[in-house]
Amino acid sequence: MQRERERERERSFARREDEIKLLQYVFGYAEVALSEIAEYASERIDSSFVSVENYVSVENLLQNKQGKTNASSIPENTALIQYKSNDILIGNIRPYLKKIWQADTNGGTNGDVLTVRIKMDSPIAVIPRFLYHILASDEFFNYDNGHSKGAKMPRGDKDAVMRFQLNIPTKDVQERIVSILDRFDILCNDITEGLPAEIEARQKQYEYYRDRLLSFKER
Image 1 (cartoon, rainbow, N blue to C red):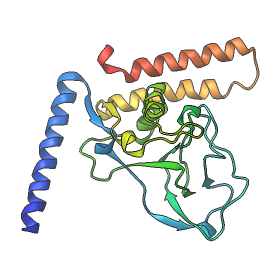
Image 2 (image 1 turned 180 degrees about the vertical axis):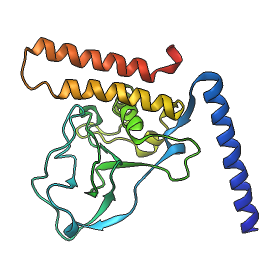
Image 3 (image 1 turned 60 degrees about the vertical axis):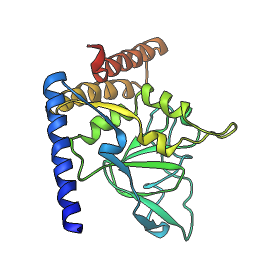
Image 4 (image 1 turned 90 degrees about the vertical axis):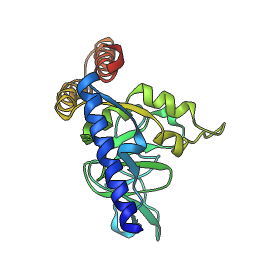
């Protein structure tokens, strides 16, 4: 019985893979729910194994998609959620603050931060950086904020986040999009001096191209 269920699951997975490839071939992308390609990290790590450099909470995630800074303190004798390099960490308190960071190391975080990890058995190839750009979009944060609960300290709905719909093109197209958006991202974030109007113009240009590159239906 168990073996038959596993075979059926494998057949279902193969059918979904074929369906996605067909959609990408015909339309250029496949629309999937986030839960189909990613999951929340669940592994635990003791707080004694992290430092101020790799502990992440909503306090040291920066607003408006600016990444993170070092933590001011670390909780003691606490089991933290372990994140790994390329995981995407999203502040789940007051989603309108748009706190998000793609991990470039391993570390620990708490339950106020969503740790999104691409599934090993995803039926569609997804580049972590491409997924980051989608989840860093205003479209996602507007969706997340719209499903948040609470008045003073609204909290994002973890189940609703996993229902978020995204368009996934083929891997080579993902790579081209990531290359373009990363160049804009570097250009915007490397401007430390200059006229405020110039900085604002660069940021708007980046947001315009990001939205256009990720909105396949409008093409």
